[in-house]
Structures are given as structure tokens and as C-alpha cells.
Image (cartoon, rainbow, N blue to C red; front, side, top):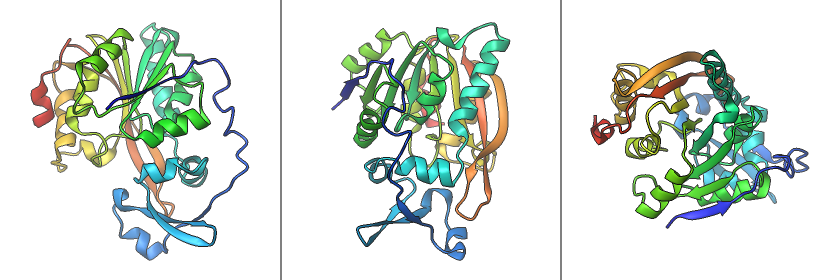
Length: 275
């Protein structure tokens, strides 16, 4: 089932959460334990009403339920820079190409609680459409950033029905943005390709990806798809920059690539989802 939330833009995006009165009690595991965990296995302890809850970093539903926890964990404590970085490199490329953010109709794919949309909104994009598979993400946006999107959909993009596809096409989306949502199984290749094919040729694509996902030694399906796409005639690469995404729990920098590309085909063949 698809869930839609119309969200008229215009009021300050941080109308509720900018002066967060609640500080959550968060504890990281001991350094020795944290160092042995893969990035998608990382967890923290949340102390609420005297009880300790173990929550994985990728357990977004549990994190989004608690106002301000996502921001406190990833932005205040772990210094995540990706929404700002991806928005910055996208608008930089647009300027070089004689275009302007105010012309863009952006699909924020894997939108979460609206952090990437907030960074894009600061540059004055024309339209912001959010999509996420997690209903708690939409609830967090309605609660914390009620004016940031023109529309927000909860949908599984591996199984998009004709009604939703038609509604999304009506937005005439010409930019796909995906921040801190690719890899680790969060967004399947088929879903990413479905989002890409909502746009025609010459549409912009801006996303970030962990640096190891572009390494030939990574043989996961998603990694292979991204490498094949960037080397194909269907996509032109405009910008590739390595930067510090955030810190790990032990303070080690985690590096990602910020990528801006342009779609060159009306339809990217579905075979790319199965490379």
C-alpha cells in the first residue's frame, strides 16, 4: 500500500525541532567492541526511563520514533556532513552548466526524516518530493519538518503500481537525489533503477556512496550496478569527490564519494539491476 502526505511548503522547516528541548541518553559500546563491527552492524544503547535499549544504527523506525534522536546521534555526535555535501556539489555543477537549483524538481529518494531535503531547500529548489519505504520516516517528517516537502510517499519501489508511477510522472521530476541511503541493502538495485526511470534524458542524479562500493573488489549487486551505470552510455559523470561522510563510533573518519551525473537515455534497461 502506498501512503501519501501532502505537505505545503513555505513555513520554516525547523518549526519544531530546531530548539530541541529533549536530549536523549545515548551510550556507545566499548571501543574494543565497536571496532569489530561492520558499519551496518553498528549499534548504540538508549537509556529511557531507567531502561537500556540496544538499537542498531540502521534500525531507522526505532530512531525516527523519538524526536531529535536521529539528529543527535548522526549529526551532533558523529558529525554527518553528507546532506550538505551532496547539495553543495550538485548546485556547484549546476552553476558550471549554467543552470539553477530553482529550476529543479527533485525526488528525494530514501528521504528519511528530511535532512537532505532541508539542505536542498536552502538552495531554493522548485519542488521537493520525498519517498521512503519506512512509514516512521514519513511520521517524523510530518512531526519535525512539516513544510519541507511538496509531497511525501511511503512506497516500495521494487513494486510500484501504475497509479503511483503516474502520479510521480506528473511531477515531471528532473533530479534524483539519494543521500546516505545506498548500499547495505537499504535500497535494492531494482528500486534505484525504478526511480531513475521516472526521469527522462538530461535529468540530474546526485547521490553519495561508501568509497569501497566503487572498488572492483566489491562484488555486491548494488556496487556492480553503480560501476556499470557510470561507465555506460546511459549516464554521464560530472563530479566525483571523496569526502568525510561522518565519524565512526571510535572517531575514525568514514569516507564516501559524492557523485553528480546526468541521465542520457530515456530509459535505462532493467538488466542493470541484475548485473
